[in-house]
Length: 526
Image (tube, rainbow, N blue to C red; front, side, top):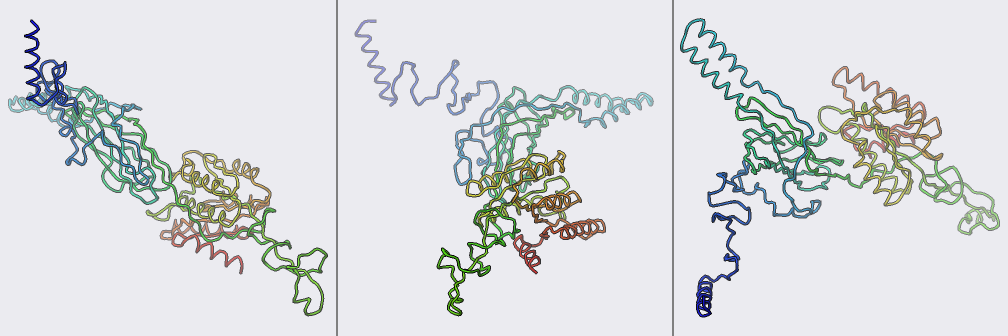
């Protein structure tokens, strides 16, 4: 090609580009035109899917792949980040992630067992009676049975994404959980059933935590449900999957481990009325009145004036009456050291009726309120428990100590809302607790007093010089003879403790903790 011909061709290309309004590139493809792989098919840049119909024959349009969705609001959009709000996760949705098979079980569903029996019975009767219709029916039945057993249950390969409306709810809040399941394998799943492994302590209040559908390769399904938040830390990290063949004769059950999603429900920082304490105190200034005379606010006695006594402590009324100098003594107020001990044995998980909180949940709530109340009044407070795992927070004070206690009461596995599986060795833990207690420490023992072991704990601490106050949530009813007998046994144990100089707060299920403390205080001061 000559130089003139080359310039003429370049002019024609610039004219064509000017008419189309698109810049020219060496690839011969404009910027805003989707890429065309070999064969001239057009690929959607947002999904990478061949939209010309000349692909593998599978429609990969995302809106058609979500088998369980009825509205566009339920569709999965991996490009949209999770909006950050109060208590909400700020992590953008990364899309479904691969799962790990923890266990797999293959079994027969026996759905065709009755049909097989009818078929063989028809065949037998057809031969015995020389009946062609019965033999024909048997042949048809055998054909259906062959279809039912022609395929095995598929082995699903799934990716799962789990979204939470908030990961820091308050107790009583509703948390919406959205689960997206994608078939990342090459096989069609004709009958797929997915069941969410909801933490046992959380109650599902809206929507089933399960879904069933058929999934083609790369297709997704989405389902949502709502749980009621309660104190504690919970992990959503598992799915139970049932995959059946097309006839439903065989199924494979999988226990899948998924990427975990966590919810932490922190109890609020609130306190109850001032907790009445015993006279055992530390040498530091506080709020508990002692029998010692010294600096304080409550008048104790008068003594003869000594050189160097403060003029503010001279009783001028006595001097005006008889001219004698006398010095006023006040009752000293000291700081108390208190350890709140929880009874978390399996026998303590008692509940009054079918609804409401069990005794351990009420006891943990009482512990939180008592702990905060004692901190507010200037005392040193610690935590301990008789549990399947070690629970210990040394006595302390201040905002940092309060935050540690709040975290412990919320997330420690031994303070689970569900009964423990391990055994609690009470005598060994009691000896360890006695070694940890300071000489001037007193104990608030929170227990429903379900058996004689709990009474033994209270008496053992009392006789070793640690004054004990028992706060006992009442979990008993008297609507049946058996429950009435259990209530009488508990009442006898509380009376025996009172006879051993142990203070007892009997906390009924229908009253507030502050009311129970006030009622007990009036009885102790009477």
